[in-house]
Image (cartoon, rainbow, N blue to C red; front, side, top):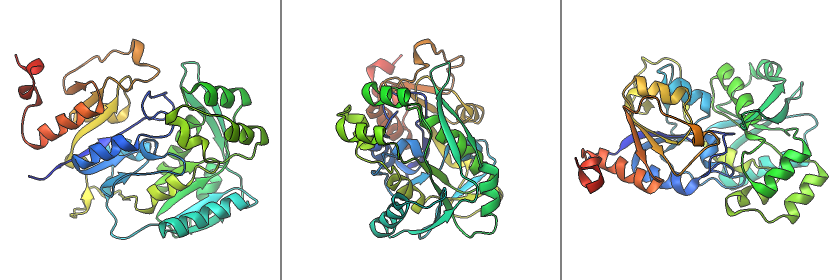
Length: 339
C-alpha cells in the first residue's frame, strides 16, 4: 500500500513552541518517513546552516502553499536540480560570495549572484498582538530586474534592520523570532509576482550583534541560529531541488502534485489561516498538535472541529498518519478513542 501525500507547516513569526526559532528537522524527518511526498514551508526545515529535510519533501514558501491548497496551482517535482538566482544588495560583499561558493561546493548547486540595482530593504517589527511583522521596499524593482533572467528558484540574501532591544531580548529569552515576519511578508510578495520558489536568509553586519552571537549561550532549539551569521545554507539546500510551480492546473503528469493528492495538513495549535480553511472546505483532514503552541494558543478556540484531528505531539501525529495509510480509523486502536 502506498503512503499518503501531506502538507506540514510551521508558521513564521507566531512563536511556535516547537520549531519557532531554528526549524524542526527531526519532526519533518519523522513525518516524511510516513509520507509519499511531504510539502513543507521553509520555516519548518531552515536552521541557518542546517537543513535535514528528506528527498521526498517539496520545499515551498507560504503563499505558494496557500495557493496550492486553494487549487490555484500545482507542484511539479524536478528530475535534477534548480538554477538558483541569489539576489543581494550592492555592493556584493565577501559574505555573499562565500555563501554562494559554499552552496556550489557543499551542495553541487548551480548558483548565480545578481546585484540589485535598487536595494531590497526590510525592517523587523513586533506587532501589537505579539506576532512578528515588518515592512519592506524594493520588491517591484527586484521583480522588474529579474524579468529577463533565466532561473528556477530565487534566494534572497539581504540584511534585515532590527532594533537592538528586539534582537537582544530574543537571543536571551527566545520567543517570537523578530526577523521572521519581515522575511515571510517580503518572500510572499515576491513569490506571488514571479511564481517561483523563493526563500530569504538574513546576514548581520552589526558589530554589537556579531559580538552577541559569539559570546552568548542560547537554548538548544536556537543553537543552529547562533552558530551562523549568514543563515543561507539551509535556504540553498531547500531551493536546490524545490518543486516547480505549475499554474495550469489542468496539466497532468506523474510528477505533478495537486490539492486533490493531499491527504492531510499537519499544523501547530493556535493558528488558522488560508491553508487550514482551504483544507476544511475540501475535506482534507487537519491534524493539530496541541504540544506545539503559538502566541495565540492560550485563548484560541476552534469554532468548527469537524475535520480536525487533535493529537498531543508529533509522535502521535505520525501514528494517525500511518493509521490513515493502513485504512484504519485511528480511534479504533486506542481505548481512549473507543466509544
